[in-house]
Image 1 (cartoon, rainbow, N blue to C red):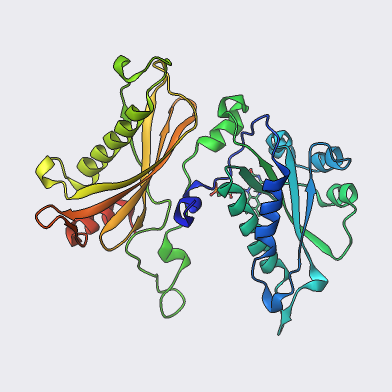
Image 2: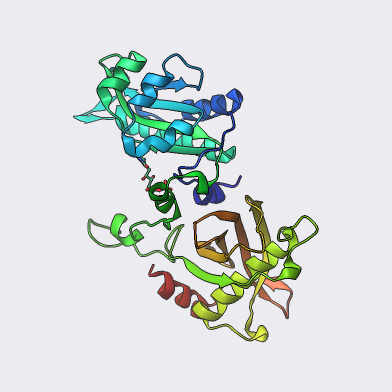
Length: 328
Ligand SMILES: Cc1cc2nc3c(=O)[nH]c(=O)nc-3n(C[C@H](O)[C@H](O)[C@H](O)COP(=O)(O)O)c2cc1C
């Protein structure tokens, strides 16, 4: 998966499928972590893999906070932490924890890259975790990561399902990144993914379903198009076909749950990246009643000069409208 898609796809969701994880996938995650950078190449990170059949599994699971009970359904738990004595110290700055954080991030991305749901947790009690896994005193556990395949949100209890249904949010770029000196907000072209979400509801038609009884995969592409049409009209004020200046260059689509006639469909989308001549949307088709995600997709739109048949830079006017909308 391309890295920008991976950033958009990785989520800390909580519904796990009743499906084992192939050991080689876990191994690839550990390999990705192993090749992370570290200060002085000291590699202070350590990982303990606790599978479903592990003798430590029950006790490790019991160390989780009650609010993280959903993680017990994940077939694999990976405990990540730092062997502090192995980390570099520069002046008085200790690097074992940030190094471990970077390795943890590599582990998460490699998991998501393989279609896994990888959810890091800080909600556990340290003493029982130490006892369950025989952790040495010098080792600082940082996160317990639940690893498994994504499951059905409707199998979660209501409170947990609500958490998963919430849109992702981030602080604005200017609040976390500065230019020249502290406090001078960095002003980018647009917020990075995921920015403000645009939503519009769609009406399923009987004719959208096929012999299999669900909405046909080709219709889903049209549903995504309806989302874009809504976005262009509502956000950019582009309604007439002759005002369309974009051509669709790419659609990546993952069909997660079949859409049935009795379902409700909402398109949820946001701009993830803006380049000189193109920009990308990340889109989801969801049921607004229970948050189920039917489809995840990414699309790329290229600003196109129909006279020359070539891409051209995005208009300032259009860029301003997007910027105003997402507040970047
Ligand atoms: C170190 C760390 C600890 C976390 N602890 C928990 C936790 O105990 N329970 C939980 O449900 N989510 C936990 N999360 C997940 C965060 O809530 C989540 O990453 C954040 O809301 C952003 O959502 P996203 O990962 O889907 O982008 C943790 C994340 C990190 C990085």
